[in-house]
Image (cartoon, rainbow, N blue to C red; front, top):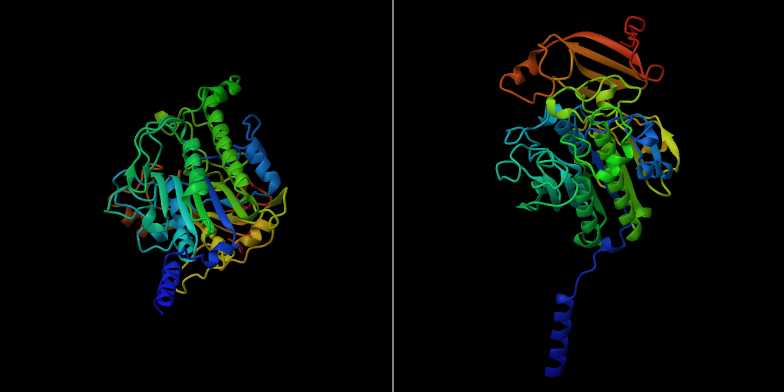
Length: 450
């Protein structure tokens, strides 16, 4: 009898202490790797028409998937664009109106529902590696941090890699400052994500990794071997910029290699994009290396025209996305949350107000059903054009009667009243299918559309 009781106790102890294998071990829901660049222009990749910059890894990714020719950021400036991607909401609705300086009160509130939080609740393991820029009080209990927004693992900086992309000193891993690091930021960020994929994540769960490169935002620093490949660049700083994009391409290649080595590529959606258009060369003294190109588009970063918001984007998902294809169906950063959550089979909160749409169809070149047009608002944009909407091939640009403000000057006292009370004063209408460069305003010719 005693022997029988001991046997039963032993069996119970074995059951209690044995690892519980969850249903997620056989979970075939897709993994998500979203790669976000900083200030990469629409025309900065080989596969998007740059005549000099060599981007073999991204060119290969485009051949393996779909090139999204009409992809957009949520805003023409970094913090707002990131807030839109995280929440699926127009950044102004979130309360992020511009880039966020260090120690600024502006931030993505803890009350916001994020794509990382939803996927985490649905059983995904989550990681952020790279530029955060969704708060001013970084790594402080005074504002939400990446883990408060759903990231189980985070290796981040508040804004740029400092002092430059080379040998940065300002990374924080899960709340603890890392200290000086050797190498270039994009490689450091990619290596962290790769280590997490190999040994940091829960292998029994699908994953969401948001990898945010600092490149090619200033202050630019690039490997000498890559800079020497562009020795023929005539303009001061151009070789450094071209090499910076090429170095970012190398980092993408190392991430793709990691997916292959771990046999993850076949069940992973890779989405590559940029947070806004390329930096304007002469906007500030330190931007002398900013030689990004908007391609055929009008404007650059901080413009509400296409050059500020249309960005180079590529998506790859073997067996789900036809390789070597193009899609001209609009896809925006605010579409990321509803699109990924749909692919993961997750349910959105009934009371969640989104501005993005489930854009899985765009990855196949098919029409996306939207309840409202894509919308952009940036009150410190260059010039008086501050608002734009796109519906189908039509884009309406609206000017305001408020003052001309310093572009990219961030949020200051008194700006809320300007934003609330300024009136729209003039409209421009463009047919982007016929006029990608927004050269001919046809508002007067199509009053019904306007």
